[in-house]
Image 1: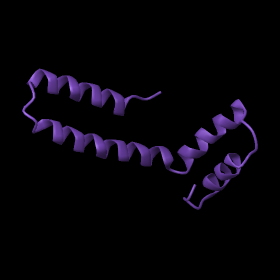
Image 2: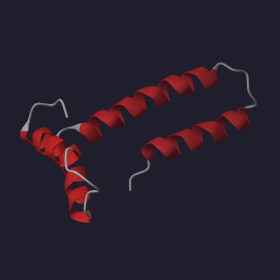
Image 3: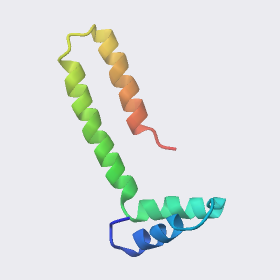
Length: 82
């Protein structure tokens, strides 16, 4: 919303709509978030947190198979694409 571009301005207007958004408004909001850079920024932040978490788990001395499962789960959660 603070990107200062047309997409963020339109998104702000959608959010200021009274009542619930229609399905088409929700679809438009998702597209605007991507256009304003929100999706890329969120993915970048998620990857940063993932790498910090993986580094923390790596030094815990946990059983290697448990670490492997945690890493697999963490990567699945952050890398999935719907």
